Each structure stands twice: as C-alpha cells, then as structure tokens.
Image (spheres, rainbow, N blue to C red):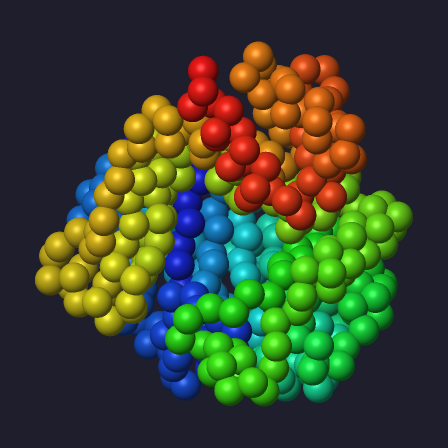
Length: 373
Ligand code: SF4
C-alpha cells in the first residue's frame, strides 16, 4: 500500500440534518464495540496484520466521529496505528459536533494523540440551527471552542454553511464575524445544495423554501473571501481558509491526487494516480460484509489518461496552487485573466475568487481545448 493518508468513516449521527445526504447511520445509542470490531476486521481482510509504511495523516470523518465518545476515538486510533506507524509530526484530525466537546473528551482526545479538531458549527443563529435540524445551539458552539483551547488544541477548524434559502433569516456577515472572533486556525465555508432524499428537497418541492439564487450565492461567497482574508486567513481552496501554515493537510492530499486509503462505510481509497475504490455505503451492508469475512468494496475504477488530465485540472484549479501554463491552456488563461477570473504567476495559472465561482464551466472549457490538440 503506497498511502500516506488514512481516512476512517464513522457514520453515526443523533439525527439527520435537513440538508444532509452523507452516508450516515442515525443511532440514539452508538454501537461502539460492534463498529470497532467491524473496522478491525475490514483492516484484517484488506491488509492483514502487516505493518505498512509510516503515514502522515489520520482523519476521522463522518457522520459524527465524536459520538464514539473519548474512549471510542482512542480505540479507532489504536486500530489504525496497529497497522500504520505514524510519521513524526503526524496530523490526526477528528470531526466533532459541539455538544460532544466536553473538557473530559477534549483532554482525552489530546492524550490519544488527536492534534486537530474540526467542529461542525454551520451558524451562530439558533433559529437557523433549528431549521437545519442541528443538535447543538450557538452557545454550545462557543463553549466547544473555548473547551478545545483550554485543552491545549492550537489547531482547530470550524465549518459554516452559506447560501441559505431566502426564507431563512440569517446574517451571513454576522456569522462570519463570530467565526473569526472564536480564534480558529481554519474555516470551511460550504454553499448549501439541495440533495436527493433530504427534508430540504421535500420543503423545496412543496414550495416552502427556494434555493438561493446565483446572485445571493456569489455575494456570500465573495463576502466570506473579503472578511476572512482581511482577518488574516488565506483562501487556499474554493471552500477553505487557513491561518498561515494551518492548511488542512489530509484534505490537501485529496486535491494533490496523492494516494490515500479509507476504511468504514462509503470510504474511498485512491492509489497510483489512477485507481479508486469505494466501500458499501450503508453501515449495515458494510458491517455485514466484513463480519462475513468479505472485502466491503462496492466498486473500483481505473482512470484513463484523459480522465486523469481532467481531474488534475479540476483539482489543481480548486486550490490556490493552480496548474502549469502550457500551449493548450495559455490562451484560456489570458482570457480569464482579462476578465478577472485568473492570475498567472511563475508559469502557474490559478483562479481568483471570481474564477472559483465559475470553476466547473472553466474546467469544461479547458477540457474542450485539450480535445482539440
Ligand atoms: S451531523 Fe453532519 S453527517 Fe450528521 S446528519 Fe448532520 S450534516 Fe450529516
């Protein structure tokens, strides 16, 4: 296995948020022992007991990994470390919901080797949080931030959601300012999308809410860029902002197309720049497969060179690194630069925030150009 990055999907949530279509399992009581047993078995089936090369990051995502409790988080990390030794300075990130961040949990995560926590805050407006079906309120979010700092976490991130329906009263500027005031080292801002099988889709289909229009989306995206970069954050990826040297190391591996391996329901793995596989999506299907001694793989894919090139362009342009200028894309970048959508520095072309708003169509344009050469 050539992966330097390990992802573990922990699917459990107390309830489904109104907009969420992630691979989750709603459980009032989390079956911690059953999940950990299945996770250990998946690793045994896929890689045996052999020690792998040292890894640079471990990421517990979900779902809500913090619902495993402090002891459950430690046991997941023990299972990973039994096969994957850690490089010096390893980044160990755990996603958490604010209501799970108690002083006891935070200090035990630190003792277990967690170096970074990603908090799902989404908004500081209690009415908005209720509309989202979140299980915390704004005061719990602020308390969680204080608890993390008291426990000694000097690297932590928070998530916010923008472009809410116009029927939902919310000040995006106020939420951004409160996020900045909390003192996190990293902020992710995701635009709301209406996904299948969600309460939000039903509300929209009944006409109770409408999707934010393009003007609102653009205004809020650019407002985040303006406020967060003024506050000293670097806008280094479409949805992500970091204090200096605080970029998300694990997620950056995805955008750089380096190898990673994922375990747990729906987890994806990627190797050798072209091979991808993903696990059975539903918790019960994944669990039953591994308990029966079978690899829980749902599908594999090998990318053709043309698909690799498109993916390199798409992922490269998502980030502030950009992609190399070459004869096939130089005229596009010149056009985009004239329109304020891109800059070219040291033979690398990268998108501006206005360009990021057009990412999909710009990459599609590049793909057309490539097919002409
Ligand atoms: S907590 Fe996260 S993963 Fe769970 S339902 Fe809400 S948005 Fe989805």
